[in-house]
Length: 196
Image (cartoon, rainbow, N blue to C red; front, top):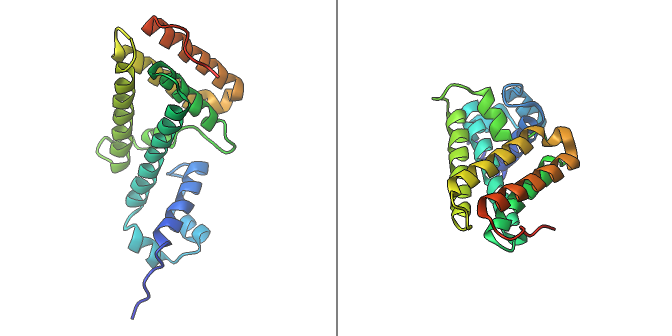
């Protein structure tokens, strides 16, 4: 009778894959490397993730969930809708400067899988559309005359942080936050945005 995998087997495999994908990229990591690093058997890995595409999709969904943590942290630090947008930029700036960070895994994977029909490409694209919709909802709570424009500008600042944040470090993050404050102030014609 075959053994049943432990309840945490899927999570252990996904955690190992996440670490490897984050450090080396999805294409550079093979399934055998994940098996070796995780210390699981080939049968176990494939019983949990029938293909590498399935594993990559699970990884991307996990990464997409990190955005929800960023939104929650920014909401807790903000005193206004305008401040919430600025705090999102600040939170991303903090996270992209954590040791070992190579930018946004969803953006990286999106670039690695240009085929629009590939499941990894679709999950990444869905994430970006969700983020854009969330930013637009937040911008609609402000006094902005054009909430879509405000949201799109904040999204471009966040994109810049994910791309260049690890290069420019904490100073780059400070510049991005100041830029977000200027954009929000200009777009809302509001009082100065609350800043830490």
